[in-house]
Length: 585
Ligand code: ASP
Image (cartoon, rainbow, N blue to C red; front, side, top):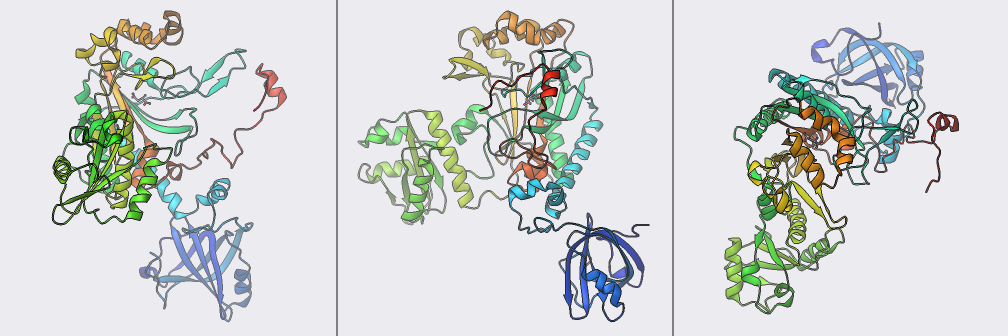
């Protein structure tokens, strides 16, 4: 037998028992005639004791144990004289009488402990060692619990998990496809699913009524921080539903997850705001509403008073930061540099403080009378001690986005973005289309299967840019955790949608004829959504990166550095696939 107990199990109540443990050597230290070894497994760490005086050969053997050796030990549980309150097994130790080395280990390239000395690259290269660390393993345990709770909740709600294929053809979600050459169909390629979107809609046509799947999706996107080319969705679809039906079911699921995973009871309904409101008040379609600091428009107050920058602006707006009036000149310079960074692109930052007596002192006092500054203060409803930060620009949307970045930065600086506080929100009524200046055409903001709001359908021909979609996102703490829509279920409308998106009749038929055809055989009204599991787990685990809740993630260049993928393939394999490489950059 390899073990009678795990390394996290023994307590004071076990004192006097003889037990056998198996695990990895975490630490080995000698003190006088004693050798102390920490043995670790998935469940915890136990201190082992070897005594030179009692059993010299055994102690010698223990002295030779290197880090990460795999061992089995038998001994008697003894109460420690020096208890360790930080360790669940810290009241006891095992006085070892038998030691078996099950496998020796090479010296690990970094310490396998919570506070490791291993850098990111090294840890990814030896991810199997990294996964021995509590911090990483506990994220995967959390992930496991979440999927169990998702399945249990959705099962109770009558959802059926159905697997959809991975070797398919393009599903447009706005990214590039990963493609797989077909040996049996020379010159032809499969695409990996960017989502199971079309298949789940076909399942609704088939009458499945409520479908879900915890499923890998693949998107070949340009490098962006914290994206993985393969990621996991909780993908869901329902028939005979309107937007409210979908939001209610999935708000219920979210509350269930908060309760079972984080022990947080959310009684109130999630707030719902429209996309337009989100953009107006937060400059973002995924606002972090853990804190206020809403964007305030100042054109009426500050324009036309002789300050050229504002007089020539298309939009002037600001945020009011309570209790920040004591920001020093230096801190304000740092903020100015922050908004001027190319990623944000503001021209400059104007600030105004409300002093204790209510007087406003600004960086543009030269141009504005106290009366106007007081009008501005009233627009913000700014209390004494507040700092007002103001940006301007030609384009309202761009300037609002810049203010949104500044708002998040100030939220961080003021300690308003606590990882253990959660604020959930639905954003609804997204625009159906997004205009691309570069390509001079419309793109679907969500995907081409999203339905327009019935009351806006008449605008499809005349003013497509203003058509609102039956689409919604769930946002938690400024992270878009999920999104979906009520779908088009009418073949003619779907066809029209493709036309508006620049598909010719032939292209639409070739790519999506199967779906439009299916819609002619009795498609029920349907809708759904998909959650990003990785993002949600990282949010619950308080992680900065989704990589930390994925067992074997890719790095920022889309590489798996452990197995060295992607890699060059043999000429014979290329020949078999009828492929030739023309050039490599
Ligand atoms: N397929 C969509 C996505 O991946 C989600 C949905 O509309 O259900 O974002």
